[in-house]
Image (cartoon, rainbow, N blue to C red; front, side, top):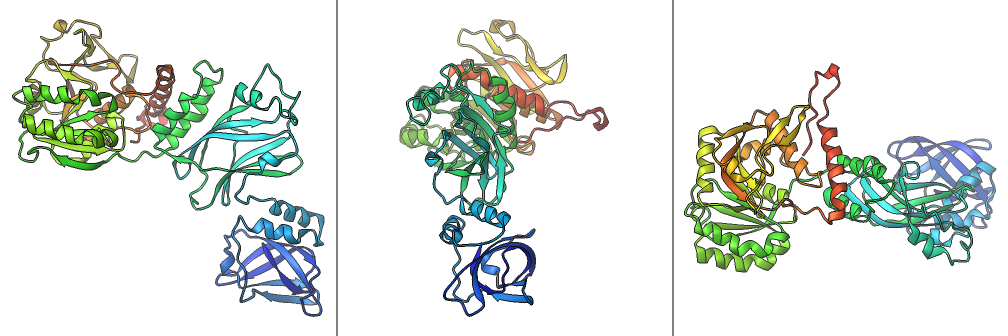
Amino acid sequence: FLRGWARAADPGNARVIVCGENPVVADCGIATFSRQDTPQGGAGFIGLLAASEPLRARDVEGLVYRGRGGWRYASVHEHRLIAGPTDTPGHIRSVLLQTHSTPAVLLRLRSAANSFEGRETISTLPVPVRLGVDNIFQANSSAFLISGWLLDPDEHVQSVRLRRGQSEMRLDDRWTRLERSDVTDAFNDEPLFKSMLDRETHPHGFIVFAGGLGADGAAPLHLELTLKDSRRAFLPLTPARLPPRQAALRQIKSIDPENWGLTEIVDRQIVPFLCASESPSPGVGAILDAGAFDEASGPPIIVAAGQAEEKELAPFLGLLALDPETRHAPIALVLHSECFRRQAGRIRQLAQFYRLPLRLMSAETDDVYDLLEAGIRALSSETVVLLAGSLLPRRSGWYGRLVSAYDESGGIISPTLAYEDHSVRWAGSWADAQSENSLSGRYAGYPLSAVTGLKLTRIAAASFECCIMPREAFLVAGGFAGSYLGYRQRGQDLGLRLSRSGINSWWLPSVQMLGSDEPFSTGSASAAPLVERIDERLFSGRWAPQPQGEGNRIKEASA
């Protein structure tokens, strides 16, 4: 937007040359007005420049335009005022009513005068239209998951767009609508909406994934609501920056599992959001040595304990101390940062009392797989033993048997996982006969005595709740895929990637670990079926066979 004075500037659209270090040809919509401070023959003008190349106000040195009598040049004043995008609409409005131009140019100027100024204006609309946002999560610079509501009983709204700087994305043609009776109840007694709302249906809510908005993170993010009469209103947004997995879990907690639009929410919003999001590799924060960790021999045991296992840490360390093998093995205990803050002193005392070679680490996550990965990346040993804090060894000597089997066979070796009633929970993941990219289990529910006598057995994928493996293979595979919400498909995904890279997986039946069926928390029980559905869609999408022309190659999952 330009404001100044010039001689012989004609109202209307004109082609101009924007002078500067790199001259640019642009369209300029010009409107004129009377100014008492201009020389004779001059008049005030305002204009909107539109060029195919980016323009910066500070780079404009002047305009070459065609006026009455030939080409003319208007230079930018030495003491010019440069206003920001949220201040400019006010400058346009201050002079717009005094201007004269063609109807098309005046319409463009009125639209620019009604641009976003950094404040909410939807609540001041004189028509029965209101909009609100409950949650907006940003996983990276261009992936957003937004939920909210739009109340428009008289259908005044033409479009709803998400905007940031020069980038925009229309939302109302891609969002999924939800029933929101609370919105109806909140506005039912408002004079503007009274008697207009249907008490039987409430399709006011929405959930939408928005991606590819651009990387202009400095520009303010906002919703732009356009009415059918071309009026616009705005809602500023402050997104919560969260890892994609955490953002999706927070969102699905607010969704009724019985909602009729659940399938569309998963397929069109949640899954695309997770696929488009970037998941940084987890890393450790604080590190505290509570024993002679570096002097201990053998592969380090990486123990991942979430907040659910916090109260069981003392007896867990006691069991490790009672086992002659693990008492002298290097132990890396990875905790959520809050657990680390609360428990570091107490755990250090216990480790010193038991004389355990323990290293304590913190990480900004409560997901057990992320805790395990943070520990793997923080160490430098060639071989690591992974152990979820929700598991307990059934007998002593498990560590030595895993190490001996690894020395003999290599690859990845997992023990049997059992319930506390000594029935089998996991005894190997095997390739499904119906699909080479699907895994199934065997022996689930059998008594442990049915499998204890079996020998080391080759399987399709190991369990990463407890295993011994080469650290470098884990890093080359990219670690755990960060977008899965649960644990089953997340482990299978990494297992398939390792298998494709030539790393063999083995099951050692003679070693058993006891634990629950849900070692990794994914929120409330009501959300579990939705989490399972999302993970199944992610897994099937990543591991679906390629078309025949591509040689049936498998799509590799990105970590």
